[in-house]
Length: 317
Image (cartoon, rainbow, N blue to C red; front, top):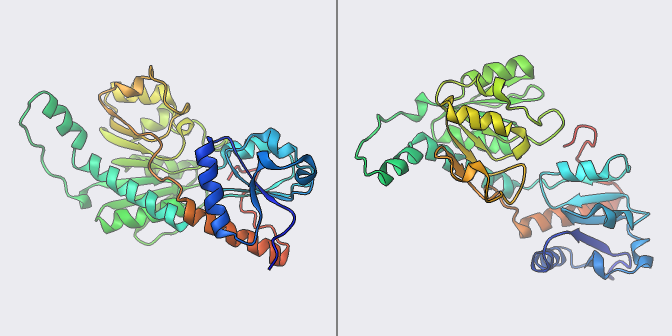
């Protein structure tokens, strides 16, 4: 089978090594396609492109393709891309990878256990040479609340249930998950927060979720509750979080995402005794499995002409 004349540009603001790694993976997954770095294409070739595969692209590069119909992101989170596309009319496909969900579920379980077994406290006691044990709490006696019950939240809930935690969850629209007490809407959010000893945030960043965890909602959590944010930094009001930790409303926060990344060296998070800082590492995309999913969507498009768009631009996810 001959390779299509029309190329598929890969558009990214990543460094050269990262771009090349993605190109290698995408080409291996789509040997019958011509996948190229957008920088290598002429204006004539760019004018023919109807599909682009992207990873944090420069919007100006997309505008150089007047016939572009749809964009396939290799990330699950697409809030920045949604904002950049605006009312362009482009269809957007985000990555939905079972491997990513499994990796996130692993991270949620690992860091939930980190908080459940008082590891931050014991680390502090070691520094001060304090030999003192805490009373053990059974997983069945601790409720983990999950904000966001999409693909990632569902996988996380299953892992937590297998570890014998009680699990509740909140989503924008009502969902039913076996073994999970589910909530929706504003009233449901308050009820879910009130029972969450450990709160895990897995929500997409939208206009509705930006600043969702403000001072008022953090105060709804049980005393000495703990927070894990594996979603996006701006979902949590940063100043409110600092004040909640300082006043011991919150006992500890595990943060993998921040409003500014990399986290600036002068940020308060680095030195706060009740914060664990992670470098956005909870669920990295696997290039091989992601490329295979992109390849499947491209193949479907070639065979049917149907664009497998799965993002509602108005809702932001």
